[in-house]
Length: 166
Ligand SMILES: [Fe+2]
Ligand SMILES: [Fe+2]
Image 1 (cartoon, rainbow, N blue to C red):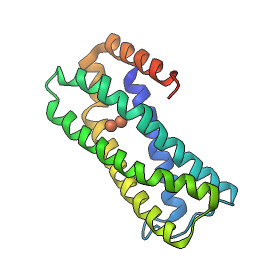
Image 2: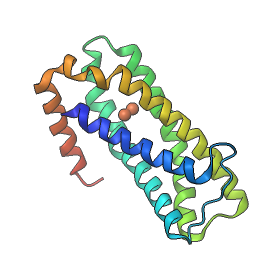
Image 3: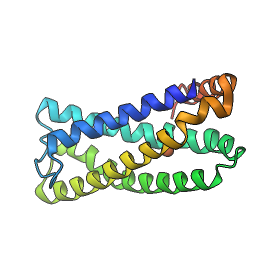
Image 4: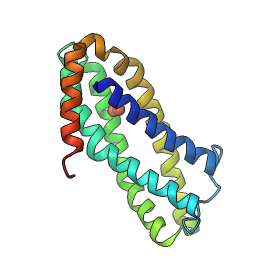
């Protein structure tokens, strides 16, 4: 069921955001990650994987497969707003991803860390806000709108995308 698949990815995304907030701190986000430590390295790798899943699978699937189905039910205002938020997420990821990959290779110099945590804080708040909106406004309504068959059909299409090399 597509509602379950997307919900699970939302939960996984929120989980990595939450782990980063706990590790770095929610105030100034100023407890610098150290990529030479195994636990921090894992967090950075998880962040990288989360950004790649978002940009290569989750967002394109929602835009190409889910939003057009929702538009058939008059959701254009909602899907246009969600699409704009996707663009903002992609823009932040395009700056944050190279910094994250770089940090995994060479660590964080002070100036890079400042930019990194500024971008990460922006991405975290945007993603949390976006997922809340999708969960409440879209995901919870999918079984009613698309029916079990429609949800299964979309899940199968998403499975096809996930199994395709990106
Ligand atoms: Fe989305
Ligand atoms: Fe989503």
